[in-house]
Image 1 (tube, helix red, strand yellow):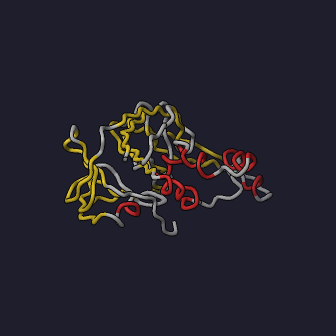
Image 2 (cartoon, rainbow, N blue to C red):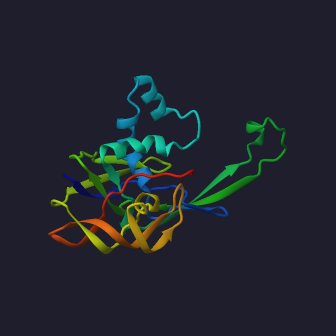
Image 3 (tube, one colour):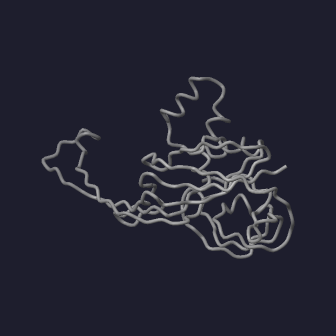
Length: 236
């Protein structure tokens, strides 16, 4: 049996992550990547880091290397039949923050300097009270936290989860207006048309027209969700 949950997030802090860098401007796209959501929802910690208390502690509070391990961390979710889609914005506003910093070569490289030259940058963030929506698909009942943290500043967000009616399965041509991870959907569905959302570590697609299997719901006539999505990877 497949359980499908409609999940809505409301930001209680401003949300920042660098989707793109344009000179001194660091911009946050109002789309949440499904990799980031898996970490924020606690699905990675609870399933991967179970060998010892020391390993779990060191992963949560100290990262000795800046090397992504998405395949290692997310593959166990495939084995459990859990999949999280990327999130689209239901309503959002942007805020622009300017920050300044000084030249600190004498701290980093022990260089002598007679100058203290300030520099600056701008961060375009998503404002508090912005709302996002995504789906959680599971082969077993899934309990998700009410509060999570997202982005570079560990911004607080409230999660409201609604279990959808029993999902039925069919096959054909359909449109999915939410963002998708192309690596996760292209092996089981034929992607006909889409718009690209450029963002790391894997660019997403949205307004997608597909041919293949999908879930549908008797009481939600317009909602069709691609079936058999799993986390798949390439070198990122």
